[in-house]
Image (cartoon, rainbow, N blue to C red):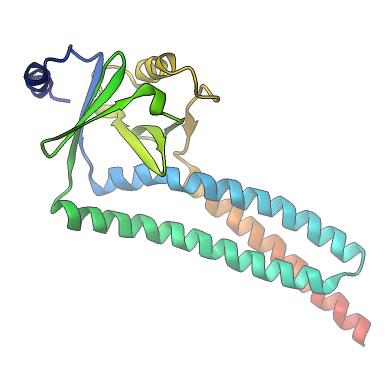
Amino acid sequence: MNETSVNINMENEGLKRPFYSSRFMLTKKLFYDFSSVSYHSAKKIFSTFFCLIACLSSVNLYFGNYDQVINCGAWISLLMALLYIVTNRSTKIGYKRMLLSEGKEPSFDYALFDDRIVSYHEGLKREYFYHQITRFFETKNFILLHLGHHMYITVEKNSLNASAEEVKAFLISRYTLVKKKKFINCANDKKWALIFLIALIAVSAVGVVTGLVLKARLIL
């Protein structure tokens, strides 16, 4: 955050000087980086179903339940592919919606105080208290503080007036009720989600083809 901007805001509202501050413009590149967090759940779902499909296909093939292998593999692969497509599409739509709503790429100011975080956006001030934070995330460019209902406080690392590690340690020390006192790195979650999806589809395809071949042999 620009220091002059911070001082003006603080003087107008009678607040103390913040410990840390950040000011940035949410460009397309930063928006897509922030959206990496939306692939975190998808990555976990794909990895879980990859293991599940691998186990179920092996067991069902062993016991001769070929129809289950064929049906489950095909449907689960389709549903997981749709989930990835919807997640990817939501990011693109989200960026376009933001531009339509704001009329431009918006700028954000964040000031981190002892007991709260104050944000400034287009002349509007909002306050968030540390007890509202439920989880900590980070991407390549952002420290993300989850508030629930898919809402995040987005602190851009490169515009901070201190190192990102120092600010992360400060945030964790300010809120002790978060169960996992660490930041979950989502920087590569989109890539890993795609890898697990491809692996899941590949295992499903092997199971389906094997099931069809073995079923055909029984018929013949």
